[in-house]
Amino acid sequence: MPHWLNLMLESLAPLLWAGLIFTIPLTLLSFIFGLTLGLVAALIRLFAPAPVAAIIKFYVWIIRGTPLLVQLFLIFYGLPSVGIVLDAFTAALIGFTLNIGAYTSEILRAVISSVPKGQWEAAYSIGMSWSQAMRRTILPQATRVAVPPLSNTFISLVKDTSLAAAITVPELFQAAQRIVATTYEPLILYIEAALIYLVLSSVLSALQARLELRLNRYGGFLEARS
Image (cartoon, rainbow, N blue to C red):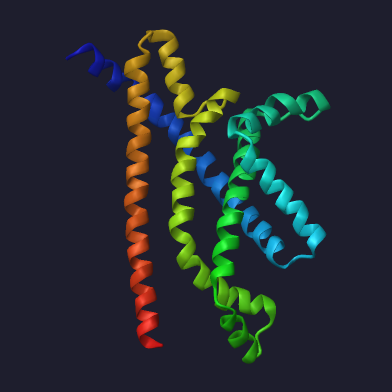
């Protein structure tokens, strides 16, 4: 068996284990918390008084205008200087959540704004409150439009979690770095790590395509009924 293949097979298990224990949980938790934060931020931008909306706008401006790696360094290495010490995984989770929250807030703000005003009027005309109209009428329509960009954000997040290696989170990429430190085979190990990320992204892209197809069919069914 060639040396490179033997090395890849030997390192496959620790890389997959690191992905299972750290990369996947970090991705899922960051996206769930970030999406929740993004929805709240989007609703504040759209419906809250101007001073409150300005605070959210400032937050989005800061996060979108600075590199994610710098944000992670500020949280993990910078906050201890003011007495706030976080473990690596928590710091990464906070950093990714804030980052995803800013980007998803803009996506959700755009798709909610794209729902015709007539839908609000129709909801109010049958006695719905604002929260009922949002939950039963506006968000279901906005969700169909939001799925593609949100799915792309999720897939990007899977790859971006490799940045957590810079703040010592023992995820997939740092596991590859540790093996490189003992084998001195960076090319083989980094190619293997890249292939694992590629497989994950490809699977998620295929799932995204199927989800979009089902949503389009459902949307067409509703339009036909109306």
